[in-house]
Length: 95
Image 1 (cartoon, rainbow, N blue to C red):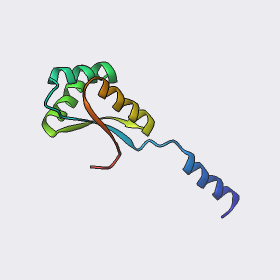
Image 2 (tube, rainbow, N blue to C red):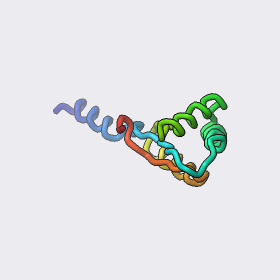
Image 3 (cartoon, rainbow, N blue to C red):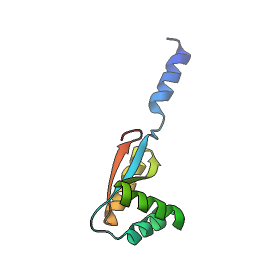
């Protein structure tokens, strides 16, 4: 391996990870209007997108509400827990 190839390989290893998602799960406690409100106020989604994601949670049992680095997704999950919503972090591409 040449010095240039070694440098490229190192760059790949230290690049930030963006392959993580915040997933919000359906629960029997929160009203649909409250879930929309949380998505709108916390994530800044417009009302239409917030309602679309809320309906996905309601009908499909879950919705991916954010994607990015693991640390940021963990912060979103903590925030969702603070709002009383069930949320987890998963690797992008996981089902």
